[in-house]
Length: 207
Image (cartoon, rainbow, N blue to C red; front, side):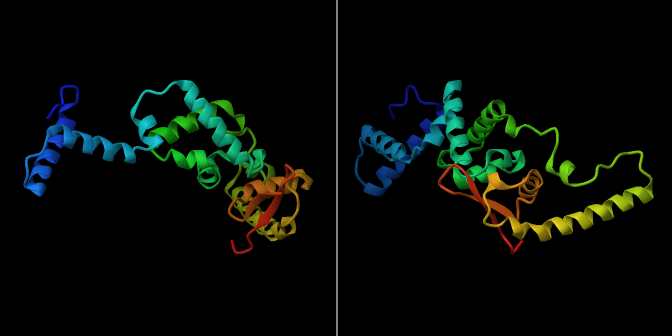
């Protein structure tokens, strides 16, 4: 096979394909026909993800793609309600660009760029838990820790029971406490763009 500039592994695969072609056709086969078949068939199956995952990529490419992902996500979800741990899940649902690059290496490159460019994806100094629940510290006695756990459990039950009151309201109209609730209970609360730059809160009563 004419494989002067092809690595040994790929050359071996082409040789195997050549043997298959001869065996199946029971006719002499030109090597160039086999190579053309492999190239044409392969080209049709090469996705953009394959290219970026296997080649060196200019940093500005990742920057541009990351911005596309970010803009697609924040068009569907309030920017200050995007937690770092759930970003990939949100992107998978709301970003066609993110879906276009499913390989681990491409996803990592995109997320690293997003992490650099958008402070919202960095670990926040104050989490929603620190806003909604009393702080604990190492100086507490065992009794105090138990009391704090019971209080947190009581508050959580109270907060979950209050979530239906957020349903159908505009995110921008929520109080800071209500926004903290919407951001904290991500399994129960979602958002839908209202078409005017705001988001309608959607509460899933089933969770």
